[in-house]
Length: 119
Image (cartoon, rainbow, N blue to C red; front, top):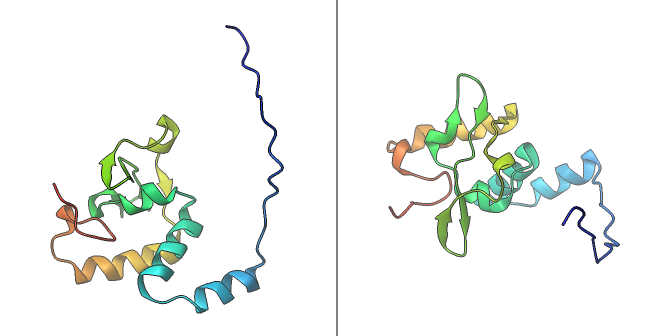
């Protein structure tokens, strides 16, 4: 097969938030919800990739994140695509949050950023 035909057409139109709307959303979130939304906005990662991040995936010296796994249906596995494995810049505002979290957790290498990994 030389060509692949797309059989469905999407009517999806992206909804772009203003800075004011983003600030309002973050102001109305607490704790982990705020961190997750900020992580998504600052990195563009899929939620499955964010949930699977380990402290050791953060490259502090180069301000980057290595995506090595995804958390899907309660299990850790590979990221969705090979493009997901490319380093992602670590935005300054999220880097500050991560450093605060890293200081609170002594076992950085055995912990995901959001919950204890099992195995």
